Length: 359
Image (cartoon, rainbow, N blue to C red; front, side, top):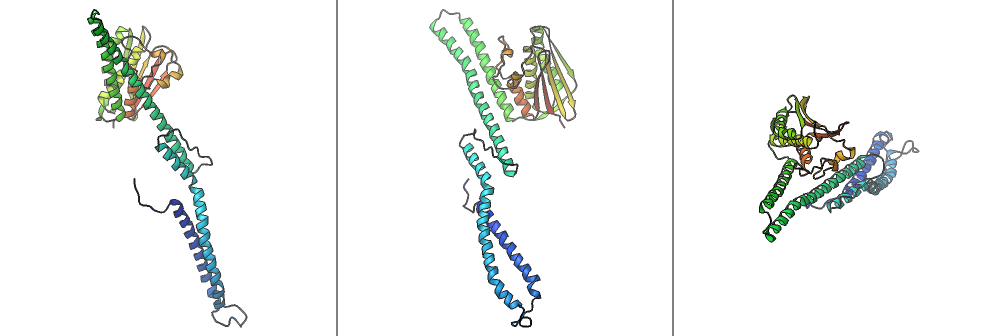
């Protein structure tokens, strides 16, 4: 943004210091004149010819006062300039750090030393912003790299199958078509998941009143055949939990949670419990499942895109694309909520979603 040239903050501060000091000196001289010299007789002979009078004092004091005022003005300018340089030095470091960050270097930190004051608070806030921005950019770069890799895999497989069918006409075309259908279905699911993730992060959706308990029942009804196939007991408990948001995105969030709870469970005789409820101004959805014990260091990575812990990777038809909990996290953030993950002592996971209750 182009601006007209003007005085620097350092010069403005120096002029302010000098002006304040000059005005203080002038007020001091005015007080001396008003409360001292007015009691001295005003005649050319003095008091009895021996005492100083106002005429002599004024002619003697006026040149010295003028010199003192000139000295105060110069001293105020020089001292104000030096003080301004010292006071604005932290701001100069922050400006240089901002310019460095503007050129793309987000790893630079100010780390200003000294005791706490306004400039140190600004420096710490700027360092925190740079740290979050660097983390966000690195996350987006990892996401782009992983998404490219995930999309490249089915395309490469499709190309290999097509080359095989073209080079060897004797191959079973029905088997190749079936494999192509499976690979393309996975690519389509991945693309739809990426679009849904992007939509949730943008937060561009129409908000309406949504009952999480109804969504939980709908998701459980849809996934009941999968649970029965794996011999998993699926229960929905609790009461109404009304929030404000997108019914489509919230249904996808609940479906992902329930499906993950079914898929990442015990081989047989496992349980999945979905509980909803309203607590004050918060609507809560809790999905709890049995399963293998989860290491604590695995939990922070579960909500990252394409980050599948080795203990939770499936090789069957429900392997997924690694975006289930990432989509859940994105939808929760878009609805101004919080997502909590905690392992069960006996194995499995408890996922708690807290959303603002509808007014």
